[in-house]
Amino acid sequence: MRTRSLLALAGTATALTLAVAAPASADGGAVLTTGSAGGTAVAAGDTVTAPLASGTSATLYSSATGTSGVSCTSSQFTATVTGNPAAPGTATESVTGHTFDPSSCTSNVTGVLGVSSITVDNLPYTATVASDGTLTVSPASGSTIQTTVKLRTLLGSITCVYQAASLTGKADNADNSISFTNQQFTKTSGSSLCFANGYFTAKYAPVTDGGTPVYVN
Image 1 (cartoon, one colour):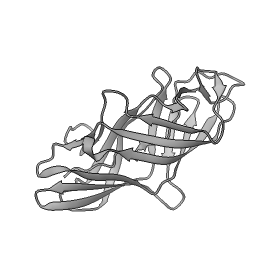
Image 2 (spheres, one colour):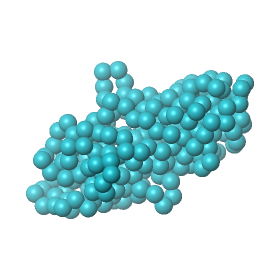
Image 3 (spheres, one colour):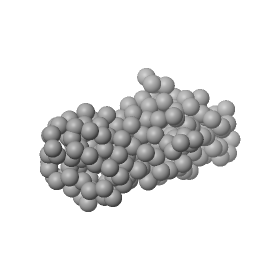
């Protein structure tokens, strides 16, 4: 059984977290800017958001090279900027929301009839965005990144819980995106139908602040 911890992921992000990057390092300017690389500094306290990039899906597969698992076409993350120093440097964010629309999710796992819900637990997470575009999502001290997935199966409803110590992604100014690739989650509880490991992949774009694209410098 595959469920997904899409991101927490990321998510991840899932997830997660957002600030787009593609190093444009502008000395004297802020790490995060709006409008353009080297543009107006994003203010601490601003909220940044991003949906899945158009035409893409967030996936949680049972292996890094496989295609068996769960796929969703609608997901979004929300974060609050907590620090935005001069570039080059590292900006910080508090990831306050990471959602997945279960009606957009499908599974190709035998015995799975549908997805009831995907919940990213233990929020908020802390995210750091470096001038080189590296994005790291971490849980609060003593906590963990966690996603709970509820699935409808031939055997009834099952709940699968997946955890990860942290997530690493990459920001790109070319399309104001943040990408997570094969971020590994481990099952901590759930039916034997839940696969033991979940590999989360997703691309969120565009990352915006009040509707204006965000860049990393």
